[in-house]
Image (cartoon, rainbow, N blue to C red; front, side):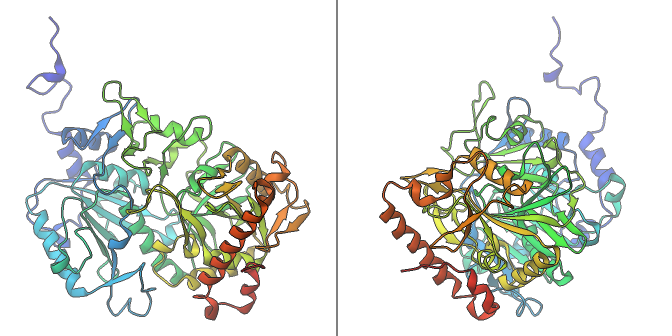
Length: 557
């Protein structure tokens, strides 16, 4: 009888006598160790393990299960989206007059931070940890060294997928610019730590330290790094952007602003343009550069027909799948099952997109796309924006929050205005980013388009989502220059310049009012949204050039 070598008690014949993870840890460990960061008396610390080694650790620890063709499926427990109400920035002399304080950027005292940090260090003692040293920023001139310390192996894989990996020879001398300690099983105490719940996401710019506790949702790690870059880069005249970027064969670069669920990842990943990145970029005097080395895509109802580039990443070894339903007998995935959350996610290295630009860098953009998912169904599916309208809509950041992306969202989209199409991650006042964008649009003569990926024929629940095939056709026409010479008509409510024709798109779809069964109902909803725009923009009126106000809707009331 042949012996089953996978279940023998002694090491298999090909194995070294030393645990390979221990060997890797010794080789990949930075001389700037955890003790120098005040982290003492830990259990085993696994430094910069490879993805295969982390897979073994994750499965051995029952953190996830292996799906058909190799992705690792994990569960994030109670928190399946960002805990926006639990994010804080430490208020200290350096941030007091620089941070945009309010509902989004809530202050935490230095005393509370020190207490929270001490309790985390006590929690860590005796526990095994995983450390990944990575970079954020493809442009070395603006690169940030980040160290992420986690108590789970799968979060370490996530970090490897999302950020840029230093060459192996650089690991022993790596010194982080910022450190993240992410402990899902540590729970804050609001009475002691000054938090709002047992979840905490706290950024301390003076200490260059981020503390995350009480949540397994890996997006908190990603967006904390983004917040840091949003704070630091404007000081260097670099515009940090919540956007995707791709480039055509002729070198024409396009960027796509938009909140989660508006189509940044889907529309930027296409076979005829190289993907630079799907979510976070900087715009310097040298051009565009990706902050990340991977993608974090929404997967719910993903299909190989509509989104083939992203779909195939769900069939790859190394991809992390958050809260995706799996058949435990066959290992097959069900990407249509939202029984855990609408916010199912896939984290994968950008090289899994077959035509990705692995330099992560590109020229100045020729086209800028503002993506919105209009839940009221009244905005045109595409419009060319004037400079004043570009500034107005950038500061407005109108869209609908899609179910599941944040804790507490229901199943229906919620109308929101999120400044800069990413207010939850903007540490400074939106005018800082808007002024940078305005100067760059003028300097590099970029065209700006508003594309609505939301509803047509009525609001959510009555109308239909604009088909992605139609959106792609409009986007292709805009990026190729086909729409440059097409006459436009003025939208009577929003003042937008809407093409009268677009190849591959019905003329009726271009005029939302024609898609509604009751035009009077459309008029009421359109004016309702116009009033919401004007009311929201009042917070910026005293801070912008009066010319920007010419970008507001034409008709209200």
